[in-house]
Amino acid sequence: MYKPMEIAKGIYNVGCRDWDIRDFHGYSTYQGTTYNAFLIVDEKIVLVDTVKKEFSKELLDNISKIIDPEKIDIVISNHTEMDHSGALPAVMHRIGEEKPIYCSKMGKRNLGSHFTGKLNLISVDNGQELAIGERTLSFMETKMLHWPDSMFTYVKEDGILFSSDAFGQHYAGDAMFDDEIGGHIMEHAAKYFANILLNYAPRVEQLLTKVAESGLAINMICPDHGIIWRKNPGTIIDAYARWSKQECAPKALIVFDTMWKSTAAMAREIARGVESQGVRVRVMNTRKCHRSDIMTEMLDAKALVVGSPTLNNGIFPVVADVLTYIKGLRPKNRMAVAFGSFGWSGEAVKILNKEFEAMDLEIVDPGLAVKYVPDSEDLVRCFDLGVTIGQKVTESFS
Ligand code: FEO
Image (tube, rainbow, N blue to C red; front, side, top):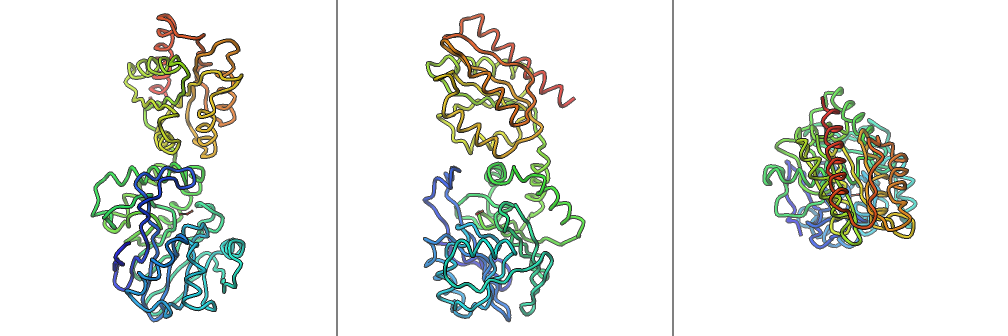
């Protein structure tokens, strides 16, 4: 349980930590996560977002340590997804079902689709303001970041942005703020961006431009997951600007699965060839590395190199899983190469190339297929393929 903490004068984080969660709909959350929710105590008392249904009691207990929950006047729902709205019925039951819930237009529709009870849903327009006493809240539509209903709520007087999922990280620890944790939090933030927001990168870029042009003072960013950016909110804003442009590094990501270690041997030689050109390389076996960790490595990899043996005239199921996942998150501006061993039919490389085409990746080499077990000549061909990949990556940065 979080000890409810005053994060700014009269504003509290009353959310909950989920220490145990390890799989967040297919995303490996090996350090758990938090569901942050915020209480603003002003002339009107406002709750911004709730938590997952299972944590309803904990949320209400946290609020009770600050005020009687029945005194809450207004609830704001920045996002319908159930990790932030699951506790809404319990909250409304406790505070009074007639109390208003402010949300986006799509939020009104989506909350109505998730809950059967009577909710007093009031939709707000982009830029609409709500005076709550000494403070004014301003709502900012952030459609498809990452759901159609997503929005931000901004406290004008404090320069505090309640950013829903954006700028978040799946991380449960003893720290609540960026200045209480080391730079390693950026790994979690990068993983979050790669796995949740990459497919909406152009929208992130547009939003950041709009915010920069507006001259909005952002003193603190409070996402619904992970730590709050109070000391250096610019750190995460700059990282989002970089990631949303899909800027890559001179790095190749080699992803493979193997039956009898032939494709694994090819992967190692290709990696050696890539490295010989001074290009960074990461080799990930799809049966040992989680798809969400592979996706994180994809965030800055210029080249995606995929290896699969041929199985039943197709590619390995786990490789297909990872490719489907990567494809959905739409990485752009990358090159791709396929490889793999086969016994008799040998379709894998052809299928992988078709997948690359569908993903709009630049195929910089037709790829390499080796029959059964690679011999010393085959391994030289693998090394040479790695050299070619390394050179193409280097050229793309010159
Ligand atoms: Fe954290 Fe889109 O929910």
